[in-house]
Length: 262
Ligand SMILES: C[S@@+](CC[C@H](N)C(=O)[O-])C[C@H]1O[C@@H](n2cnc3c(N)ncnc32)[C@H](O)[C@@H]1O
Image (cartoon, rainbow, N blue to C red; front, side):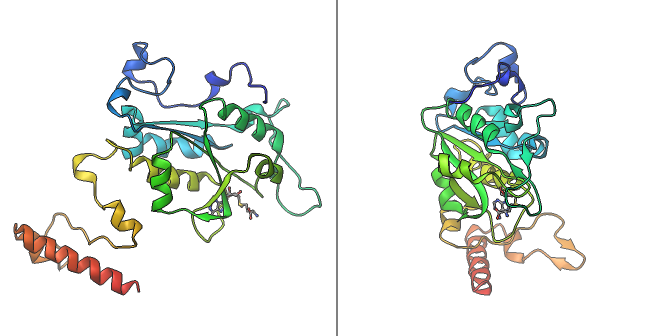
């Protein structure tokens, strides 16, 4: 097991301090708010990224940010660069065999993963990769029922292959395109998982039944005020106040969308 730098916990970026923490609540779970007993389905998600500043703002906003503040999801961004040596904490190096781009070196990433493995009995390790299995709603649901998920983000030309050989992470892709780094992929995964956690969505936010989505169905179109916008009108059925008509219109709209998408 790698050596954890002495002040690792201090340097790890976690959720902003809450009032309950300020009062000294829940010292074993930094980042939680003291309401954790209300949400027994909470998960621990670690995002391992050498660009934490690219990830943090999204995690602080909207539904994910609120879930963190409520203690529903305990999300920590950990920078493997902390385990890099040298004054400049350089983590990338030129590829053996030549070629363009830089490769993230194995030793600091391994030390970071060893640290992550001390954070729970059995973390499930994902590594973002364009060669991975395509992420979908079914996988999100699986992860939402997993106590600890760690998502390793690559960057540049990727991570030294020996990390995959040694730790055997599940490779996960968010689509048939090549991104500059795994950070956006990790955020997509985290968002999809967090919104499935009990209590994460407010009463008015449970937009799409995930079971429908997983089965490949389509959601109906949504409208809000004003009723007329540039001569485009909200369908009369939606303004009728007749719940049966509304439900029938929405079902028909879903079917039309499904047909249009083949
Ligand atoms: C420029 S890419 C590396 C491309 C590298 N040649 C390869 O095929 O893995 C840099 C990093 O972005 C992430 N990435 C790129 N595309 C992705 C995708 N479609 N899904 C998930 N992660 C992706 C991976 O973490 C990858 O290591």
